[in-house]
Length: 440
Ligand SMILES: [Zn+2]
Image (cartoon, rainbow, N blue to C red; front, top):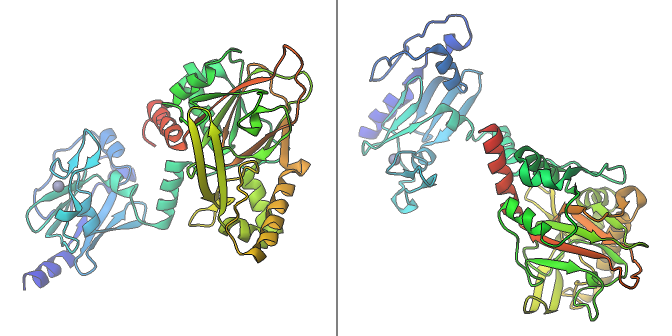
C-alpha cells in the first residue's frame, strides 16, 4: 500500500529548474524554482557564479519507482538515467564517503540493492534524494553528468582517464624529442612528454649528462622505478658470460622487454652514455600499428597470435638468482578487440611449447608473418642514439632492436636502462594535468 502510494507520488513529480532562462541569456533575472516539493526558494547568488555552477544545468528530474531510477533532463536537451542503487551506493555524505581519502565508506553489506527513493528534490544547485530511512544523498549536477551511463559519455570518460587515443606510425615518424633538463624541471614539458609517450609511444630526451643516475631521476620524476631481477637500473654493455642477449655486441632483434613476467614493465628508459663508433643503430617499430596491419593482411595469423598462449622463460643471476616462467598471447586485445599489448621477445620464448603438435607449424608461420611485417622498411624507424640521449618508450607497444656493433679496446658502447609501470606513469600525467589545468 505504501509502495504504490510512493510510486504514484514519484512518477508524477517532475521537478523543473527555472534557472534555464538565465543560461539562455533571455533574462538576467533569477527565476524561482517553478515547483519545489519543499524548502522554497534559495537566496540568489551572483549571475556569474550561477552560470559557472550550472555548466550542467538541470531542466527537470523525474523519478521512476518501477524502474528504480531517476532521469535527469539537461538544459542541452539530453537526459541521463541513474539507478537508485547506484545513487545510494555513491552517496557523498560524510557518513558514506570519506572526503579526505576521496573514498567510499559505505560497505556493500549495508547496501540495499532494491532500495527506492522516498523523495527526490531538485534545487538550483543540487539533486537530493531522501531514502526510506530518511538518509539524504545530495548530488552535484556536474558530478552526475560526467558519470552519465550513456555509451558516448562512458567512452569519452574512459578516453580521458586512460588516454586510449593512439597515433599509429611507420618510418615517416619524426621522433618526438624534449630536453631532459626541462622534463625534470618544467611541469608543462613533463606533461607534454608523458602525453606523447602515451599517444605516440616513443620520446627521445636530449642532452642528459653522460654519467649513470639519469634514468633514476626520471623514475623520481614519475614517482619510482620498477625493480626487476636486473636491478632498479641496469647496464647495457658487452659483458663476458652475458646473462642476457642484450649484454652482447650482437644483433638484437625486435622485441619487447620482459615477457617472462606476467606483468611486463609498461615503460622503458634507455640512456646512452657511450655510443659505438661502428654499428649499434636503434630500430623501433609501432607494434600496435603492425598488429593492426596483420589483422588486415593475414586475419588467420592475427587470430592465432591473439588467442594462443606461449611460454616464456628467464633464468639466471643478477639482482639475485631467478627462474621465471610466464604465459602470454603475443598480441593482447581488450574487450573491444583493440590491440593493447605486445609481448614478444624471441630470446626468452620458451622451447617448452604448450600446444597440440599439429598447431606448431601454423603458430610459427603466424609469428614469422608478424615479425616480417615489423621489419618492412616502411614500418620501422632506424636511427643512432647519441651520448646524452634517453629513449623513453611504451614497452607494451613499441618493439625495439639494435644492430650489432664492434667494440674497440677502451671504447665500449654503454647504456643504462630502467623500467617504470604504466600505472605510476599515468598517475604522474594526471597529477600534472590537474596541477597545470585543473579538472577538465
Ligand atoms: Zn550517505
